Structures are given as C-alpha cells and as structure tokens.
Amino acid sequence: MSDNLPWKTWTPDDLAPPQAEFVPMVEPEETIIEEAEPSLEQQLAQLQMQAH
Image (cartoon, rainbow, N blue to C red; front, side, top):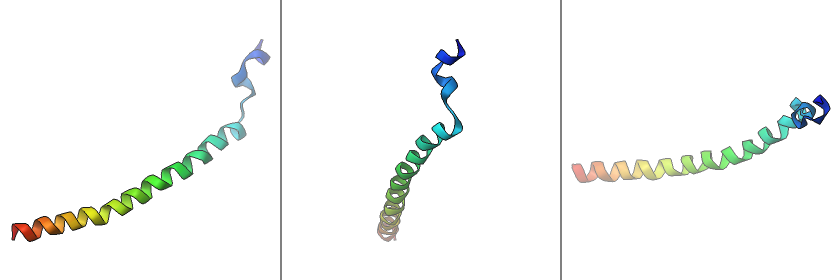
C-alpha cells in the first residue's frame, strides 16, 4: 500500500527544483525595493526642504 502513496516517491532532489524556482522570483522583488529606496529618499528630501 505504501507504493500507492505518491509522496513516498518524493526525494530531496524532487523538492530542490521548486526552491530553485523561488530564487529568481525573489530577486525581482529585491530590485524593485532597491529602486524604490532612492525615490523614498527623494521624497524625504523634498519634505525636509518644504519643512525648512
């Protein structure tokens, strides 16, 4: 009966590809955050200029 269980055939090698697929998906988010940081700094600078 254990042979009929699909998760019995899974190995760490089978679990590795999904993790590899997640890596490229995280990178774009990091680049977007990095690109957003300068704009936030510019907004802070503009607010400080307006405050003074």
